[in-house]
Structure formats: C-alpha cells, structure tokens
Image (cartoon, rainbow, N blue to C red; front, side):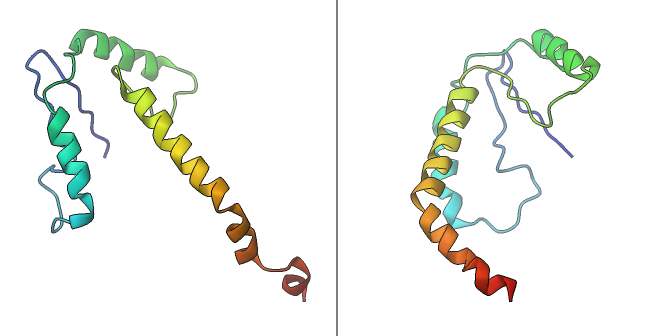
Length: 108
C-alpha cells in the first residue's frame, strides 16, 4: 500500500514515520524524526488540483515510473542522498571486491 504526503493550504503534513502502524520506536531513527519535525508545516503549500493533474498524467502514461517525487525540494535532497551512497560504495569498492574472493578459488 503506497501513501502520498502532500502539503496543502493547511500547511500540515503527517509524520511519515508515525502512521499508527509502528513497532516500538527505534532510537536509530531519532535524528530523522527530529529533522522531519523541524521542517513539518514549513514547506510551501502545494496545489491539490495540480497534484491531481500530475497523478492523472502518471495514470495515462504508457510507462509510469515506480516512484516519483512530487513537490519542490525533494529532488535535490534525494539526489544528495544517492550521491552520498555512491561515494560510500566507491570508497569501499576494494573491500567489496575482496569479499568476493578469488575467482579461481570459486571455480573449484
């Protein structure tokens, strides 16, 4: 089941980490919750009619994406998160290859 969070004219966005179906809170997510709380309700209001039109374009698309970002500001945030992941993986690529082991040993 997918969910859509969209800031409308009321300026209230639900906490995506608190949807009423949660296990016991994990302390590892405390910093994320704090960052979300700091920006909650401060995003520019979106236009529900424009969002509806965008959804209809997705529905009518011959090849809709599995995921799409709606609203301003999300793309740069996700772009940075993936750049950080790619850098980490590149920094540790030697270890990754080492973990694979020797191809001659695997073939035996």
